[in-house]
Length: 123
Image: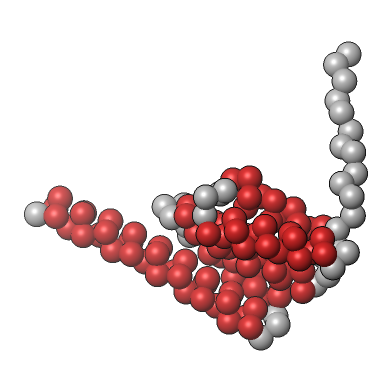
């Protein structure tokens, strides 16, 4: 009897986490539609805290974050966010969206030529 109660409790907690993540992600999209990027970032952060069991949501979250960074004219940050998606989730549908956003940023002249990164030398 106790085991069945424990299983039911664990399953309901998993459902609560999923519902909470969906709730915050939905709120992030609503805030984006209203042009409230500060609220978008907050909702996305709250979503990320709840998706440990659903990592497949990360590319969607990152692309939405990148779009909001673009709205705030933080083009370099947006580009880095899109590159993160391309590098870590190359087979997701959001990788295609991220690449399209990078191409658009480049065509609009918002991205400069990549600056050479400093190389650490061994002493």
